[in-house]
Structure formats: C-alpha cells, structure tokens
Length: 613
Figure (tube, rainbow, N blue to C red):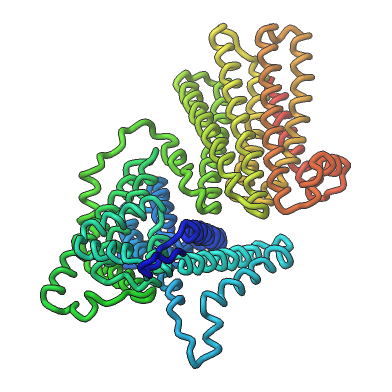
C-alpha cells in the first residue's frame, strides 16, 4: 500500500499479488471441496437422478438438492446432459433439474456470508467466523487425510471436504485483506459508480468474469470479498450478479454440446434460454420496482457479503418459481432449435452414447455406463457364438451377415470402452471403484475375443459351404452337443458379469473342464473316422479348427468367471493359477459336484450321438 502526497491511499503491486494469490487459493479450495463432495455423493447422485419423474417440481427439488450437495451447478447440469444423452433421463425430466440447479448454486454464497458474522458480545460465535473456521477445517482435513485415512473412503472424503473448506476460506480472507485498501482509493470507488450508471456494462463484467472462471459460485464469492471495501452498492452490484448467470451457463452449454446427441445438446440450450429469460425478468422487475419507489431504501445502500448472497438467492429462487410453468415451452423451443440426430445405426447407439466423458465428474455413473456397454458386448458375443454353431447344421448367409455386423458393433464398443476406461482411470481414486475399473478392463477384452472367435466359426462354416463339402452326420451331432455346452458356459459367464452373479461365476470352471474333455474326445473320434475313411481330409481339418475355436471360447469364459470371483475372494485375486490348480485337485466340493453333473449330462448326449452314426 502506498500513500500519495495528497493523503489518498493507493494499492501497490504487492496488494495485487496478494489478491491473485488469495483468488488462487479460493478457487482451488472450491475445487477440492467440490470434488470431495462429488466423490462422496456420487452414488446418491446417480440413484436420485435416475428416479426423477416427469414432474418438473420434483426435478426442481432434486436439482436444487444435488447442486447444494456437490457445490456445482455445472457438474449437475453436465451430468444431467449425459444422462439425457444416454436415454436414462428424458429431455422433459431435465428441465426441472436445470431450474433447481440454478437455485442450489446459491448455497455457496450463503456459506461465504459468514464473513459478516457479528461476534461482539458472544465469544462462542467466534467459532463460526471464517478466521477461525479456516484453520479448524484445515486441521480436521489434514488429520483425516494423514492420520485417520486407513483406506476408508468416507474418512478420506470428510478430510478432502474439510481441507477444501479451509483453503477456500483462507483464500477468501486473503482476498478481503488485499482489497481492503481499495476502500480508500477514489479510482476504485468511481469504477463502481460507473457500473451504477451503466447497468449493461456491469452486466457484461459479470458475464465475462463468470465465463473466464467457469463458476458462478466463485464469481459471487469474489464479489462478496470485494464488498469489504464498502464501495459496492445495490444499483452497481445487481447487474453483475445477473451477468454471472449467463457467463456460467454458456460454458456449461458448450461442454454439453461437444460430441453429444441432440437431446443432450438441448439440455444445454434450455439452460441458456432459462438464464436469458432470468436476465430479462430481473432487469425488468428491478427497473419497475425502482420506478415505483419500492427499492429506494436499498438502491444506494452499501452491499455487504450477506446482502450479496441474499440478492443472489432471491433472484434465482424467484425466477425459478415464475418460470417453472414455462418448462414445457423451453422443451419445445429446444426441439425446434436443435434438429434430431441422423440415424446412424440401431444396434449400439445408446450404449455408445452412454460412454460420455461428462460422467467422469461422477465415477460411479461412468462405471455404470461402461458396465452397460460391456454387457451389450456380452450379449452380442453370446448370440454370435450360438448362431455361428447353428451354421454347421444348416448354412444361412443372412445369419452370417448378421453375425459379422454384430462383430463390427462389438469392436466399436470395445474401442469405445477401452478409451473410456483409460480416460476414467485418472478420475478414480484407489479403492473399490478402482478395483471395479480394473475388472471391467479385464472383462471387456474377453468378450471382444469371444466375438472374434464366433467370426472364426462362421468362416469355418463358410469354407465348408463354399467347397461343397460337409461334415458327417455323426460329426454334426457331436457339434450339437458342443453347441449346448457352449450355450451353458456362455450363459454363466454373461450372468457372472452382467448381474455380478458369483454363483454363476463358480459354475463356469466346471463346464470349462467338461468342454476340454469333450474336445479331447471329439478329436479322438475324428481321428478314428479319418482312419476308417468316413471323413475327407479337408472337412477333417476344418472340424479340428472348429474344436480349437470352441476350446478358446471356453477359456475366455473361464477368465471372466475367475475375474468375477476375484472381486470378493482375496485368494482368487492373488493367484488365478493356484485357484484353478486347487479346483482340479478335487479340493472344492461344489466344483466336483458341478463337474460330475455336467460331465455325465454331456457325455450321455455324446453317447446318443455315437448310437446315431
């Protein structure tokens, strides 16, 4: 701070550096606190948003509550946009959530208003002053993170939120200390006088700052920090607050639009339309009330942190209630502004749309989206194998074309899931979600491989057909038994992953062993047919290749079963090989019983095939 000869105080470069440092701490604290709240409430967020009905009022309450919890309207709206794009929410359901999110974001300002807390005469109130709360929260946070963590997610979340809260208020106090000398600077005071004389200029300032910071809460917080100067009046401040709404929602809408489906883009468009309407409504309402003399008492009044927070809340809440009846109008306008997507396929559009990077803000949502995509791969690969095996009994080119088309879909899903999970990895902390992420990485590649092997089987069938060759009736009957065993093991493997069914996962390995026994037996039968001259060499080579593909499909299913069991079984997780070795040594009664039952069933069927030769 520098004092000029005329006695007027002027801000020095050191005050500016302190101000910027405080701003950096404030923004970082808000990010840390928001990330902790999102991580701790991500499962709740997912389950609540998915249960939103077509009632805009209920959606409004949900949006308001969720934004208050995670301290970010941007996160709520971006996630909502992703859910709309994935087909989990309808565009109609999203409107209420958007209106509620705008109200929920005012909670941060109400917390920051603790700056105005008057502690005179009540020493216990000092505990709630930011100057006390900041170090207390930081101490609680560091204790939870460094000394009480013990890999417990809830404790870590509490520590992260507390630490973010402490950093936020430390930054806020630093900013207020840095700008306090501005109260004596006539240049600064005159700047806000200009804002009061030019509401449109003040509005543009609000838009620009919120757009740059990408956070309405942060912008309001900075305005509250500047209120310590005593230079802010209502007439100069309210246009800045209104501008914040548009500046924040433009960034959100841009994020919602990048690579999104039409309905997801419409969600961002509705957010912009609402904030534009809010801007007009507040400007008109304030102007009318001022002309009528209703606002004379506060028009030139000095704004403090609490009044800024209250103005922010009243504007948002009033506009949300007044504009709620127009929810249907916003929806219809968005449908006219943004045209429908061109149809580019029917098989996996929804699954691909669900792999939206906007869900990275909520890892549980992102993992659930990945699971649904992999489950689609599982279903397609299962159907492909069964349909491919049918080709040896009765060749159908149209069916093969469908299998090949499904394989393209599986490959597209595999590529998308791979990229999605790799990107998600940096957003998922160590713990249960990280284990699930690794599990999905293992399983999706197995289902992709099963799809490839199904195509191999169609190529075997096509070779036989194109050469005008055929298998013997006995060989065809054997393949019917093999097909039944594959249906069995694929059903268990898919159930193990799609339903997290550990009972089904335990049934995979016994059937895999039976498939190995069947393949060994069929190879022996085949060699005997070759020696007896009942099978030509070309058909015989193809038959052996079919058995190789069958055995590999069973192996992939075995891997899926083991990966699933490893989720809850530490022994299986540590060594897959040792677990399988113990099963084959006869040390597991469940495995023994399942193996005997399946072995007897399928070999009895092979006996019937032998008698039909």
